[in-house]
Length: 292
Length: 268
Image 1 (cartoon, rainbow over the protein chains, first blue to last red):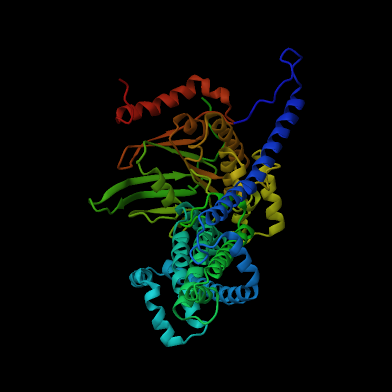
Image 2: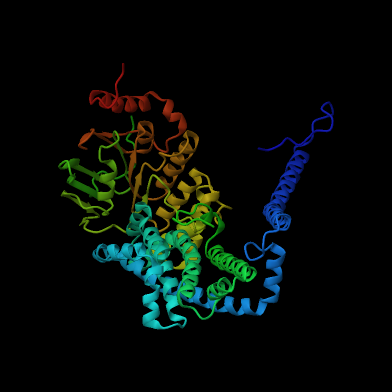
């Protein structure tokens, strides 16, 4: 791994250990700086090359814009339709966040009950799993009938898709603790409350955050599905409108906005994780969820 | 040979295990882990339990800690029958079992928080304990920044901060390299000399048991029964050089002969 710092002349007197140390340290700093720069530049480079190929390809082969608009046309569409996209993004963001929050507010207490009360776990698990097996798109029309065309059905679909990983990862995380930690707590005479908040919950946090990260990406899917089925606003609705009018540039613009929105929301959850957990705990994440 | 320790002989035993049996129910029928194990230790006495894997040593320790109920038999501590986890004692497991999100000091302080000790004085005591095992300057390090030996020292400090009358150790040095092990054995001897603690020490290592103990209890293979109790009458404090003496070798030999006789060890 470590490259040898090069000695200018092999026959000169050996370097003092302090000089070798300084040189090794400089070496390491340089390598770290290079790695940081390439971590940003390499993916950026790949994206630029792909966009250039796309642009050149559509021009060279004369692909009609309604089939595949060049990236420049998509960029123009994003700029010209900015107010429309922004308004749609706002509606969709609110739906996603409400669906996600509902997942957390319902999912974590549900996981606690599953963990604390085995008969409840046995009773509720088949229901939970079937709720997951059921295609949410299929019940979207039903929710529409019940709750109308407003925001409620979209939030509910986002919630229905997104809450499962929260429940599972929280329950698994709480149960996955090493038995010695619990024996230790008992032998120290730690109260049940303290055992939970000082040992079991912090121990489960990496797994819980793994679930939250999956959940936020699923909430995006849920909100868009809701808007597809019966929306009158939002990016998903905009996609349907653009599709209907063969405005492929706008369709692409909407997809770009949704992607950016998804990445930003995921990044926010990751930021919260970073703030809540020291780095070394995240690195050996024992949760079921990974990063994107 | 001079008597080993200056400890009073006529004192009531502090820890008394009487006729302990433990049976685990399993699909293939009952499994005998312990069979009629009795032992007693006076205050300040160091008792080691050696035996092959699966002889129920860890089960015995869990029962002595009040963390597990025996299938039959009684545990008495300080004249009282143990029916619940004994929170006054200190336990050291084979793994350090540290909380990864707490610093070395924070891990030691967990015990103080559980015992609702006054924070200021408990923290001074925790720092002093960490310094005494060579961890001065490492108080604010997290477990992942410490070596295996350092982590185990932290867990020993955590077991000592409330000045327990008894220490239970389940192969505490089993996962450490030989040199670190020697150092921790010496540290443990010093710590035990400074306070009157009854120590129940489970180990695989015969020399370690002889070196540290007043009493070595040799267990038979499954089901765990007491094979022999050997009083170690070597002068204290014991030094590394003691391990080269004929007396030390004789105790080692006695225990190994028992293992040979029981088929735990075989000389080809």
